[in-house]
Amino acid sequence: MFNRLSVGVATQLISEVTIAEVAEACRRIDVETTFGTLEQLELCGADILIAGLRAGRRLVPDEYLSFLSRRSVEASLMLICQEALVRPCVSLSQGRVTLVGPDPDAETIYNRLRVLLAERASPHGSGAERAAPTWWVADSPCFGRTTPACGDEHGSLTLAFELGGETGVLRFAPAEQEWLVCWPPVPGTLWLLSPLRLPPISDLSGSHGGRGNTRLPAASGDIAIALSVPARDDSTSELVRGLTAKATFGGPSVFDAVSASLRKDAWVSVVEVR
Image (cartoon, rainbow, N blue to C red; front, side):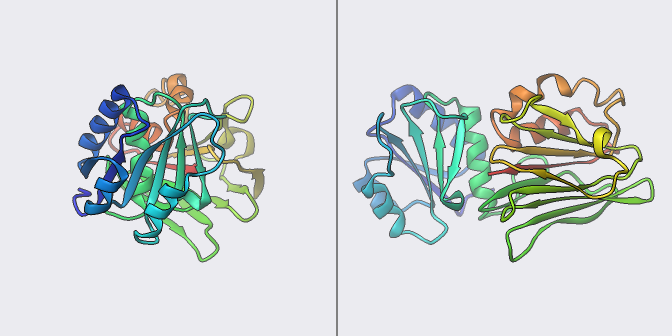
């Protein structure tokens, strides 16, 4: 599906075990992949460069920046770090640089590649996926969605939903680093997952439904989940358990897990703050 795009893997600072995980992730997402030194990768080009980062480094190495500068303005860099991060994955430089913690598995790399590729290509996974420098969003088939998720010139993302004859709105504004929630008091669910909050998962439809516009601070790593069915429904009651663990892989993993568990006439939208 992404066969017009390519991934280059600079193998010098990546272990053989991690290289195998990267290979599996690229196989799953079906992109052209080349392994080698930076010099070898220069010959084939790459839309996304995956490389290693030594322990103690606090700046992106010049050779990686030079490599990207000779590519398109959309070229991205994924750095596999040798030191633990505050989260398993961290996005920098308006999404162009992604840091991944030590010894990532194929699932982690696969989900990060989906976010990067969603900016450039047609959808992957079980729904339509789009991304901007500060967010990623996926929608299942629109049963009752009033409008598709859409971004604006300010980088904000707005999702509107038709729920029981009323309209619900979820908006992420990166300039203000906040969520705007307007959720009607009707069946439906809006969850917010965040590794920086306690508890890490909150039912916003239950706490803010029917209260008009509510503004909440947003942070990188936040994942919002909008469902057309209530959390008390049999098809969603089991979802809460395990979603926090899925969130460590990011929005794509959460979206896949929720989509697989929903009944056929239900829809879900998932937003990740990058």
